[in-house]
Image 1 (tube, rainbow, N blue to C red):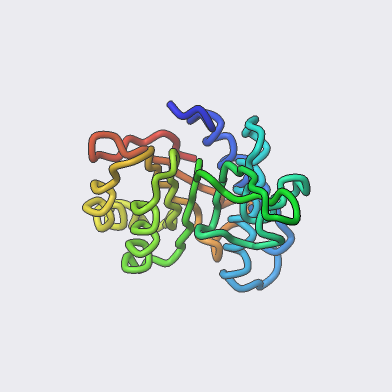
Image 2 (image 1 turned 60 degrees about the horizontal axis):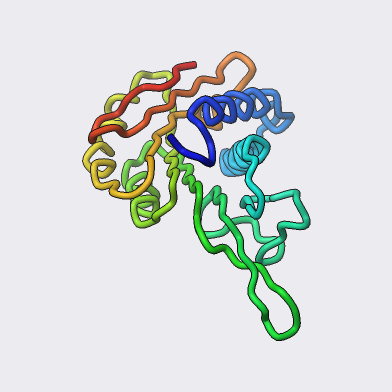
Length: 197
């Protein structure tokens, strides 16, 4: 069990973010999938941030806690979502903040192309964060098992931290009526289903 975010809180963050995403005005227009995907990442990051009660953390993208401002107004730091513990150092002109430890990282890749998924998964495997989340496309056409099978060899190489795989409705299909998500935890090189919506 993680000290930063329990599984129930993680599921809650996913549920709230997907509800907000499905109701978003951008989904009622013909916005590009990339814009909708970016919005999903921001919503999930914000909902994760609201559930973490640890001091000295910063959340990318868009941490709204100005006192935690680290590295200026970056939209991203190494990962699509990055929760980091920050420390301070004396720069000679005052105290400055830096990220001293990654606590939670996430990569979101909605392409059905597993090559893109493997690239993002590789980033997660190289990180020593306590929680790692890969977000891929939930496909109403039943392609999930093929997608999960394609990435299963890669997920077996996670050596540090807890790895979750989330499948979320694709940006081009997200709506009030279609807002499905599924969350898996990698346990003993196998996927354990935690949530189906």
